[in-house]
Amino acid sequence: VSGELFRDGHYKQAALEAYIRVIDEVKVKSRLGIDGDPLMNQAFGCDNRTPVIQFSSLENDAERDEQKGIMFLFKGIVGLRNSKAHSNTLFNDPSRAHEYLALASLLLRLLEIAAVNPKP
Image (cartoon, rainbow, N blue to C red; front, top):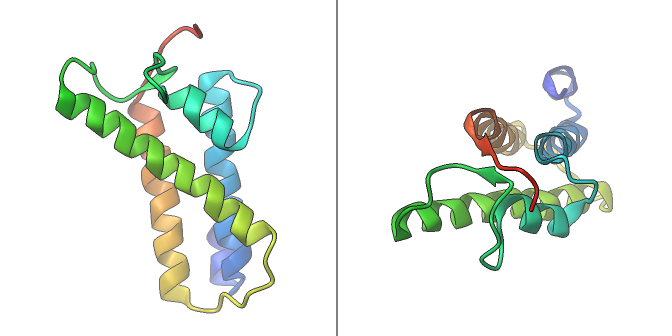
C-alpha cells in the first residue's frame, strides 16, 4: 500500500497508509470490531486476558514477555498512525520513512505467523 507513495516522495502518506494497513490487518485477524489502543489490548491480551492473536505458547515468562513486547510495538503503531494523520509536520527524510515502513512490514509478518484463539 505504500511502495508507490514512497517512490514518489510522499513519505508521510506512505507511513500513514502502512500503519493503517497494519491496524486493519489486526482487526481482520482478531475479528474484533474496535480500533486503536483498545483493539491492541484485546487482540494481544493486555491485563492478563487471553490474547486473540498469540505469538507463542505463553508457557513461561520469556514467552509472555515476548507477547507483551510485541503488543507494545503494535500499540506504538496506533500512536504513530494518529501522529501522522493529525500533524502537518514535514516528513521529508527517505531514510526515516523507510524505517517506518520496515516496522510496518515486520509487524505484518508477525501477524502472518501468529495463532488465533477464539474470542473469549
